[in-house]
Image (cartoon, rainbow, N blue to C red; front, top):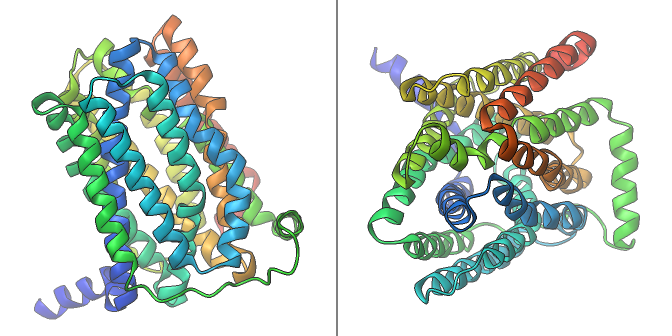
Length: 408
């Protein structure tokens, strides 16, 4: 029995045997906490200031706009320069951004446009930071440990989703929203410190060409890889029809369930709990076969769960479906990231990963119409229809694209 347990632990946490990955994971853990805490604080503040689901959408659009415009450049830069130095610079920028919002809140000067600008700057920094972090995974672990490393990253995100979201809700009610932003700044300080011990990741592509030449070259490469294109297209479906439910969650919590900040944190924590459970499963699976089949199946089921989540007014049922949505969404991200990292050629990896980031820049095409329509007909109708569309599209892809289902 002891031997079986030890083998299971070794299989589930094998990526941690690599020292550089441990430092990378620590930094990612801290930044995962910032995402969940900042999401609760910003969503609550925007809805408190405006009482509008549409405002939740347009404030979030600043991040998306920055991501859309800068991600192609981010991918080229990731392929051209030392990834460690780039990560450090972007994390320091995030730290200063959160300190500024915390000070505005402390002085009673905060306005909605401040939050929109802050979120725009978060998108600017993220357009370079996120592909650099993802590409760095391939630098610190061998290929056979890649899915385990991606899964362990997702495990940290799930853990921080539970702790960070709940803590943010409690801090807003007990201390004030400014405390959340100062704690987030502290987490970025930890992440910056964890960046120093990482090895320098030398450029994987020559930089003799101009930036636009490198972008065009990356696009030509992607056109020659139809399975990579299919994975990116499915990512767009997720951005348009699955992700908007997170933006509308503050409105759903208040208008449908009558919850306050701590209740919103509880809903966010249910998402994080599902993500944590799915990440533990993905860690155990290791370099499992059938990744493509699991990917399309998770997309179908998450769409169905979105429909069920908004169809019930009973809080325990809502929490259960949010656990399922968070878990399936995290499993999808692990599978998609692993397949993209393993299939993309190293010299194009940063540019391919930047396209997955660029998808998030298109999220206003889902969140803004969803917020505007939700102000008229309610969040449940909007989220339910989007879930149905997502389930239908993933189901069609599973039928019409058998080579995607066979990806390992």
